[in-house]
Length: 284
Ligand code: ADP
Ligand code: MG
Image (cartoon, rainbow, N blue to C red; front, side, top):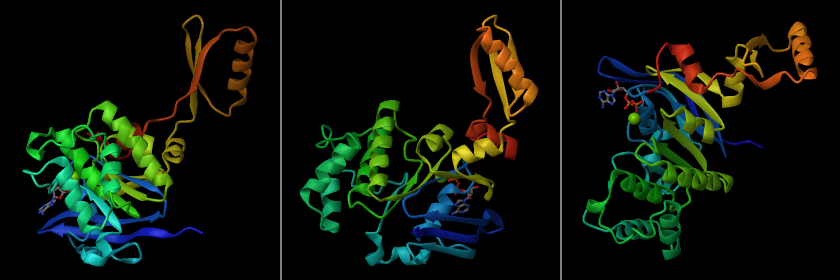
């Protein structure tokens, strides 16, 4: 049985005369990692704010964990989700650990939850540092530790690795996958297509407040593929041939039988290529 965790129907959000989100619809099932992919200013944070009751949509419907999204600001629902945004809300004069302990007390969590969260974000050694002494990347990791500490059913991550180095990014990816395997549904925004491909079961491409395409990365790549392959011969010669084509297959068989092929691959677009194809613009 699948359960719907987030359901968004024809959501619109305007700020004065400016339309930030336009007719946005999507559904996220329990257990999915769903990526909201778009360049800066496309409406990603606005969507997260609506889903977490920091903003109300101008039109349309948004349901989260079975309730209208604006219910998420009620205290009894707050423990059901975690959120990482760039406005960290950390106590600057306290240490990393003191911040997390305060949060753990709010949710009646044990001390081991704090230690687990510190390990999750690779900050065990830095736990005695004051927030004022942290780099931007470390701050992002403390905020993430806080977002996951109570093992929420649903996690919102707004550009979770934007300030992180590759080592910490890989560490966080591993942790997020583990959390997801244990049942946490994840809604994440990013403009990093490699991140979306690595983590997401499904993605939506957002451009100027509108969803341009939605699907599993592999399905989108297939859908927007030109269905060709490139064959590189040992001579260095390169041939681009159609897939599922009789004449091409005969050629390939011929080359194979004489050991002429050095490399062969299908020409699938990257998510970035698809975004470019759909919108004429870059993800950055
Ligand atoms: P993203 O997170 O994808 O970078 P945002 O959701 O933050 O994009 O913003 C989408 C658009 O809405 C931007 O053009 C932004 O300037 C505008 N916007 C966001 N919040 C407000 C606000 N409170 N008032 C006016 N415009 C806003
Ligand atoms: Mg944003």
